[in-house]
Length: 498
Image (cartoon, rainbow, N blue to C red; front, side, top):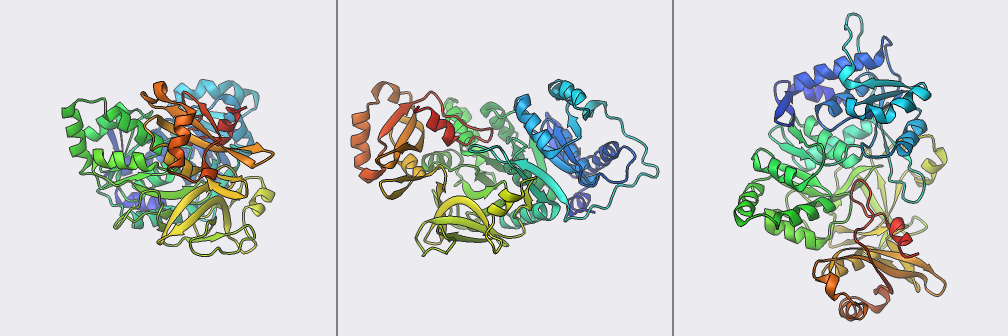
């Protein structure tokens, strides 16, 4: 039996999942998952790593779908609930999924496509358990493939990241120990469940620990604060964009409401931010509101988590911390030679958490690893006083201008400190003279919309950053283009300047 199910059996009577005021214990979750696994098997003894794509609302049905696929010996392929059909079609066809598992109100999106392509469409609400007489569930080896998640695909077509059960167990067990999860914890899930942040860090970690995971269908500041107000939740994990929205909503509340919320949040055990760089200004404001220094960490689809600020000890604004136990990390130059301490380099990672392969792309898999087995993240960092600071991605956040390597994230942090600016994204634009020209897309604050002018901005910047780092072009946007996880899509930002 896979370790995740052994863990669940320990907490049979405890509440595993809560949503809309109702709860389900671990025993119910396991039994329902087994029933659904038998439906997926449909008389066969093992799915033998067949890919099962599922499009299911967050909550009990989502978890039992994920667990059922694993119990039946399949590979889970979660689909984004908000993607258009062509995007869903790409994932289904790329993985070769022959079975689609869907919530009833989402079935219309895929029904015609499934019928025309002779795919099996199982609607959860209409799936009836079959007798378990003589139908044992397979004994799944943990070295088997377990999950395929897709990268954001901002520069090329999305790639399917294959993780095994062993990879997932390593990712979960490391976080359980480092962040000190226990069965007494209660977390709220507001993240999309087709990304590693929501699936592993929130759902899988909480259920491995015997904790309770509460769900809401769609993120909203009102629903999130309302859940906090119930007084049971003690862990929260989100992306910077969500914290930014929560801060903005908090400031619209009455003094009494703010006081009540702040008091409740101070009793939380842990609050985490990830999936994108956390602006120091947001971190500081959230600290004033909640009494918490957000724990920032570094990870990606291919790794789970690799680096984290400490649970106990100093959490440094602008830094992602130190390598997690069992994870090896080093910084290298273009020739994969380790850089001197204090010099920036690409992050390479090795450990049992690292993914197996890109689905159906052996060349891309080979190119992503060094000869001696280190995964090349494409992210650039520097170690300062023992803590890692992310400078950005080689491809979009490191701007090569006039012979300098410039961190776009560093410039963004400076820009956000100006009263005129609400949000910003800095990119490099191709330029014959400079190689790349530093450019900034700005979303102005309420007051900034009336006052912004380029000369004033340039004068302000020259007092704060070196001249070669100063943006040479500005553009004003109503909002920055982002993906489902709230990450700014830098290549889409570049198009705004054309």
